[in-house]
Image 1: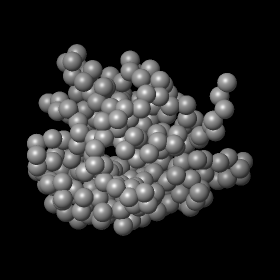
Image 2: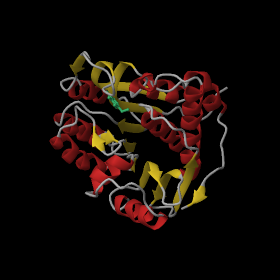
Image 3: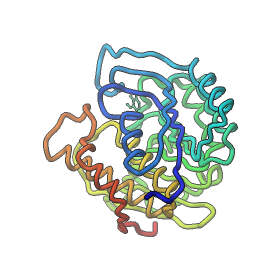
Image 4: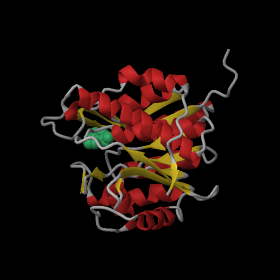
Length: 286
Ligand code: PXL
């Protein structure tokens, strides 16, 4: 018997057929957490754009507004609107319309723009510039270090001290309630996911075990587990911990089998861990 409120998320991301990123991971993750995920695809791609050629792409810029119009007409509510990879600068306007139609929802913006200090190949300077408009209406943002640097107009740093990270988070939290930056190389030689909750106060970190490989889609797995956790009542550090732990299980599994990085991470065998609802406690104050 399920007696807690059934949460529903509108997930505005691309659908990449191969390579385990965006909706292909967000939908199973949210389902495993007992949350209904309603996909609003921004584009359909045969594969993600990291390391594949001859990609078939269908831009769905014209799809989002009519989909929103129908949901409004039907009176369909969303507990969260969660945006990610966008296919055009125009889609910023459509996301803004979605967020303003669901003002009371948890507005999560994963400001997907790039990684390892570089923008993704489909991301134009205009799209990167306009991503700041989405951040300004968000409650929660989940940039990686590259995206945080772009949002703050900073150079991509090789590493940051804890004091510098707190300052980056505080500056992001002037614009949103909760900011989480993923994959931050701290000066002490540890990579951590770090976060700040403006209303509840506090800077948090969850340290990651170093794995010498990089996989696409891990930011989407992290942000979707974080969103699912916050919607289910997790505190920020617990949600960050749950998201870090699940992402790390998938990364280590993939690495242990020596699988090709561009195929994404082997997360399917570990969905049972998410379903179990285990709450880890490996977070620390930053
Ligand atoms: O996970 C980010 C992402 C989402 N969607 C597409 C991508 C990428 C990163 O490469 O190419 C299509």
